[in-house]
Image (cartoon, rainbow, N blue to C red):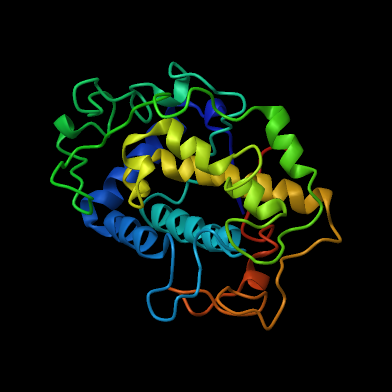
Length: 275
């Protein structure tokens, strides 16, 4: 069973293994399919208007399945690799080790946002963006430009304290844990981190930046922690709800997995520590 670790605790060998697996998946063409899928489902299911990946209750199970699929793709390259997470309540600066040249590379340059350091710099020849919003083929970041501060531990704890998973009208105005974690109301956790990183992370094609996976792995970890703290609470809505995915309805694009299938991840992976 995989153990997902805090990126700040990874050894140099573990960092290299993760980076090399990501680069191999990119080279094979498999990486870009994840970018396309996320962009397609960021707001709506184009067939019937059903909200799937964002602004809806299925935000968390949808991304849990998405991360599992990506992790399995990396493990097909290197079975030793698991997804690390970025605890942005602790590693909060533009100089944090996550942005080192030995891992994800640093900030984009001021002229055009282009990341010029690390293994995902365009100049390496290994990270050419093919699924992109414009003609620029390079990874862009603008750390701390869109918003000055990442969420704090206290802000994350305030969201973990919310006892109900979600509530009508099941969208970006809803009360409940999911929407406060996603960031459309309250202290703004998930969304704020995307804006803080900037560049590609501010678009529907955000998986073009490998930090996407570490960010969403931490979002998944927070959901896992919430599940432990509120064992009697469950995914809502359960049935008969228009335009969203109920507990036992399948989620696109997979059509073979429901939120109920994803509530317990312990058979597939665990996290190294609690929050």
